[in-house]
Image (cartoon, rainbow, N blue to C red; front, side):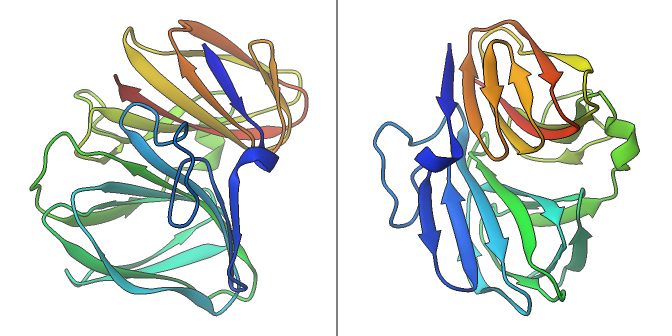
Length: 233
């Protein structure tokens, strides 16, 4: 099955400094039919104004992956970690037994990003944070694993969940295959461009929830960027 989630159908919030679209129930947006997909709990599409951001706040027992689409985000946390993640790059925070962090847009332009929350495989992991450069050109017509808790994905940032976060850039007219493992669920969001996911046409920032589909073909009608999450169950 493929459940199409057009951008207009998402939960939307405008806080002035933050414009957010929620693929799943979050904060004041509640849809009982959109409480998560497999172990994927949150996928927020955020636009953060310059010189603003999320002040220090706590989390626990959640794997939080931030995929920056434009601009950059600067991170600080209670473990002493600090870092700046630029467009096309990803950071991972394992909240574990508890962490306090802030995320700020210190740039002169609006930062846009996807914030993805995945339920951990168990409660009580040690909290951690990490970022790593992943060259965008390495994703040309290829889904590259950026974050994973699956054995064998040592080149990816580690998360404490049986899940993967992948991304690809696809040139106009090119195709790639996306195959889910048996029993796994997938969620795809088109960051930019226009693609056909099987028979489904996706426009920028549309989502698609996928289960029991085997292998799917992604055809780019324009130069495109797509991000996907795969979770066991």
